[in-house]
Length: 363
Image 1: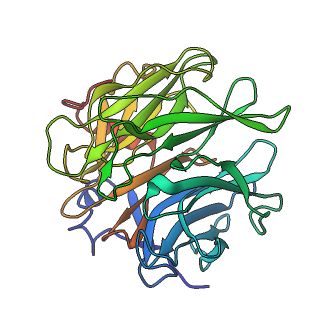
Image 2: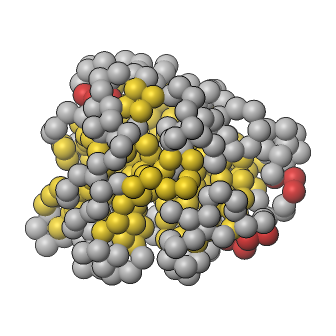
């Protein structure tokens, strides 16, 4: 077992200048191009009931490489070492995509991921695997969504009635450089009594919206933030898209643009243990830098506190956020042309030390 967790405090301060300004933020390089699957993007993490952390990513020679597979790695409780990544999902003759790992309240661990059946993500389908032994072994794959273009990116949440709500999206366009404006976000609801997944209505937006991340405000009211659609050319009207549910996640409002800029990049959105909300996003209209966290203490009405966790030249993208058992916030993101997986760890108290946010003050 090698020591893959290297602390970027001084030697890489030119990449992560925010680190040297606050001892409460620590950024670790977890895996780089030397690890299996040179391309690593995106990554997902969860903390298991055992206290271990488990991380997954899809990797290979490139985003559309025929050799892509889903890899998994474990950091045992109390350790700083990650196990060598190993393949946990690989469809013969097909390419894999976005992977999400999550432990449900009954102890089962879900692995959600994509298999691509054509040349673009518009030909993807969502699959899942289950583990009942702490992510040491995995079941055969299950097909969750047969419709081409269905994809997954963010963690599910547990609803007030015990059902699970998995954020998914339907991507159109059949273009590697353009997300169709009719791309939509939606959710798959897992009914624990029947074991059946069912779809909600689809969320439409002006430029399309994909990769929703969801949090519950209370038992009935939920909010999701979505990445905009469109291309990657410079523009001054690309914003995060927001939708609401007022019936426990069963139906969703049309997507509305917010005051948060979005350079056609993924975000994450979680509810913290104290009820505060945390949004992780790229605070730029056209660049995937800086990577910023914003905190709402008033149920998504405003985001008075904001601070960058990675900034400078380069791309810091595809964040996944969790709050660990000890209250620490962990944000996983990629950098270095999608070859490096990083982990930022901080306390919520670190964020309000920054000045209140400017333009990104609320939805």
